[in-house]
Image (cartoon, rainbow over all chains, first blue to last red):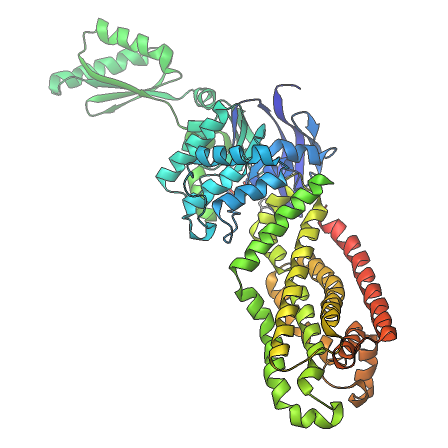
Length: 325
Length: 254
Ligand SMILES: Nc1ncnc2c1ncn2[C@@H]1O[C@H](COP(=O)(O)OP(=O)(O)OP(=O)(O)O)[C@@H](O)[C@H]1O
Ligand SMILES: [Mg+2]
């Protein structure tokens, strides 16, 4: 078996006049967390439903752990855990009854069932709540139960469709820890999200999807540095007429550097746009030293994934979310 | 085969938990039959005396059993429609189970429920003085006949669950199907007293044969020719529904 757990080639899906997926290709390596990042209606859920054998693609090739989803869907189903975007807990069943149910659907033997149930409960922090009915659980706890049900059979690949949608910060953090623990165990995670911070925090690789097309893909850090838009901010010590003059001198000096794209003065600060702060910082420090300009602070920032999204799609992600909501 | 048993059992257990924790669902389906048995049976006793002879409640019981079996089976697909609407059916379909187990699990649950409800109706009938001429064996036979109708109707309901887009339509169909199905049969009055057009419909209605057979078990005992005729009609009806269900559901559960 190769180390590629998900392989999608030239995948297309059309719903009537709507092109949900437009020639998507991507690969997910074993043991990594892959994020499909995009606004509402981008096609994330459609991609997951095709991977989980629930929707038939119109064209393209999709493999899970080397198995073609159309040729052997049953084998694919036994290799994956799927936690849909919407809650699917049954209000009448208790926490433990849910896990029993899924253990049987995944054909676990009676001997492994009980330890697996304990393990799954522990992983999402539901130990001690076995006998509570889902009806009386909070939204966040229901989500945790949903997540636990997806891993009872220890699938090599788990697909999570917007796992932290609508959860408060504490539960989100629990969900993130759960995802990271899955990775520690060697599980490959395919995650859909429209939260930048979630993708940045969790994913080894992200693909930004918009209108059914992948705009760009790569490691979050690599995507950010691709923008070549780091900002270095130098703050002069003290602030008087004399120092202001120094700020102007510094601006003139750094502007001559080839790596500097633009500068702006902001009170006691000079903001310097550069391609990459790793290369620019030493050069700027050298200038300040040779000009004997006293520095109070020097900070730099990289663009976030929201800026990456804006750069590659020409639209801000957050605005899009509000429009659809 | 073992896997099929395991996944079907899991789903059956889920439905049985629903049944146990939501007894209101049973009460809801039993509402009409119980009203018919207690109030209509009492109210029309004098009126019906001439045409049916004897106790009207005893005369009504087969029709009420048929209505109970019909109503519960007809509503049997609703939980699957809810599962379809809220996404849990899709999640279920992402697991490595045979699609048939979804239908078999629900089918078994519905028919266990039907039997339970028929037992309740028979118990109520007993309390109100209805006695079964064919004895305890007759009680068993009544339950089996209820199931013979329930099987085919459950399949209709499962088909509706997958074909219909929303549960509103489903409730409407259930609401408007139960009354004609029972009224256009020998459930409440002898066939001879019906106008010709109703008699013609009653004549092709499987419920008529079912009710006639049940009535003979209750009023007079074992009437073999009547029972055989009923069994043939209901088995043909069930067979036709299974055939139709297989065709339609195979497409919807691909
Ligand atoms: N069954 C369907 N029938 C018709 N159109 C559909 C269907 N499913 C999805 N679509 C359309 O396909 C597009 C992609 O939808 P999809 O659900 O994959 O987006 P998404 O990225 O998951 O969005 P969200 O963040 O809102 O969950 C949307 O325009 C949607 O309206
Ligand atoms: Mg979605």
